[in-house]
Amino acid sequence: MGLPVRVEGRLEGRGGFRRPTGASQVVPVQVDDEERDRLTKSLQENVDSFEEACAGE
Image (cartoon, rainbow, N blue to C red; front, side):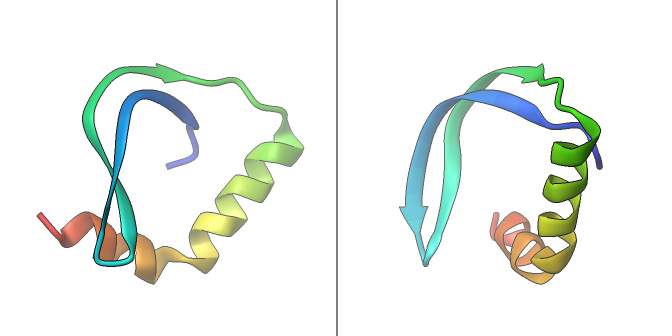
């Protein structure tokens, strides 16, 4: 955790969540410390939703 990435592909909506399909070209993205902290805080606040979305398949 802690490394933002850019992913090419499509988003598919299912069950209230959007999931990437056909994901390719995963590339790390450089962000400044302030943006990294904001992204990390957002993920930590929504970790239950994130885990549910990842466990679906």
